[in-house]
Length: 94
Length: 167
Image (cartoon, rainbow over all chains, first blue to last red; front, side):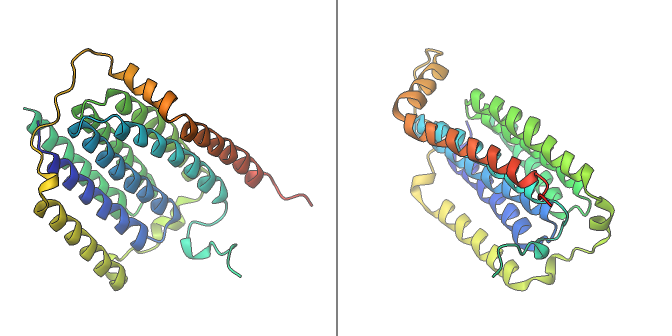
């Protein structure tokens, strides 16, 4: 089996790519997709640690992360009605 | 053998993740993200979490990506494609990303805690799923119920937000 650090490095690389998408892109759909990427890299970490230390809680936390992600994406995509630019979403601005 | 598969899946997932961020057309991003999720579910299989791999395919590839494609279908994509995307335009964000990546990589490579080569031997009885579900529904019942309430709130919130404003 591959060493644990390989999985962690994969998680780090995917996290940095996803964070780059969130910070650099201005298209709201691509920002949401990058958020998915971030959460997936976290899931890889959870499951890798759970496997290597023989603990089921990693998988259980991954299940919760997936459930919350589904809720977040549903609300975010429905909310996004007319605009594609992140800078135009200013409903919460005072 | 195992390491070769890991390197294959990891390489493809990193390439597709880069495509997600760099592609100018959101449809290309969505398809690349789908490919990336499939690779990640293969990595879950390598980590001996087949249940999570199936959940990943059902929820992400099946549900979330279809949602994305529906929204892309309903929105005019051409406007988004035409806009230029320059990765170097936001210098502080780039610096932050580089610092973040270097910091995490140094931490992972220097720390002894991450250099576990072999996983803890697991009892080969074949009832991993049973143990997982027992833990989930017994020890983690309260978070499970909280997650179901959050999903219900998201459902109601999505319906309320999608409804047309009266008047």
